[in-house]
Length: 380
Ligand SMILES: *[C@@H]1O[C@H](CO)[C@@H](O)[C@H](O)[C@H]1NC(C)=O
Image 1 (tube, helix red, strand yellow):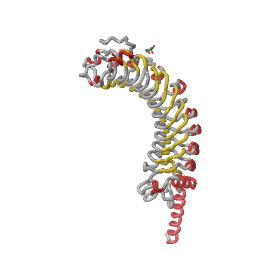
Image 2 (cartoon, helix red, strand yellow):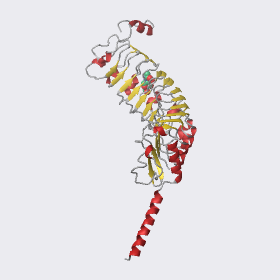
Image 3 (cartoon, helix red, strand yellow):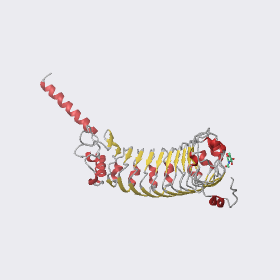
Image 4 (cartoon, helix red, strand yellow):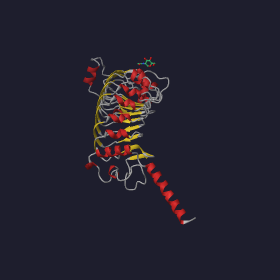
């Protein structure tokens, strides 16, 4: 081969190389969006060790190698940004509405920072978004009905923010959603009809009110975990609730429920139920013992009266403290059980102090007498 031929070959090679690298260069609208995302963050909150600090637009965001620039905080597929996953560095600022130009985004995770202001509505136009995690920031405003446009969304976590207003009824159209966590916000109003494929539902520590309504939970055949504690829910916890087919863990503690209805299941995976710190009156529901896998039951600090069902002795954790219970079945102290929990702060005259279950003192007799309208005999 002549030298000219070799030169020509090298030139050709260079030409193709430049084409392929140009092909991998990030599309300009994605670059504009990334620049906007960075510039909406207060530069004094971007220290040198952070992902955002390495975002230097003199180099291309999606083109490797990432040795000094764009070290972290985003991922690409070809020339498009597919993940925006910022490190928990305490970035403070807003989320630029131009984020919606990153139309190939599959994942956004901005958790554990100090983003504030509204979540830009343009975000809800991203057609491919599957994971949206904005937890532990200071986002405020309402959850707009347009959230239902995120047809591919599987995980939505905006817990620990300052969202207000009520949950949009359009949530039900998020048919791919399996994990919803909006705990620790300022949400009000009732629980709407929920997306039908949800597995984990967490709305803890808001101000949600109203009854547990069947239409909210009707189609939820996958629901395993329900965390609704620390809200303002009222009424009787209905019997169908514990019969939700896949249900495993339920926390309805710290609400204003006044009663509980429990039906015997045909089959159930229910393992743990916490109904503590409500206003539930009546007798402790014996039917809970018909749930074959139930291991942990908490009914602490309610207004329960009457005898403790002997059937409860097969549980491994039982918290009944802070009620007006009388009468303690023998099964509990037969030596065959190893229950942990508490039966304290009730009206159990015979709770043996040798048992850990009885460590917490019982109520003064006068209070118990009053609770039973003076009909309580001192020997019960
Ligand atoms: C216990 O469950 C049965 C069968 O589901 C039901 O008919 C009954 O009313 C329940 N008992 C109580 C006290 O709720």
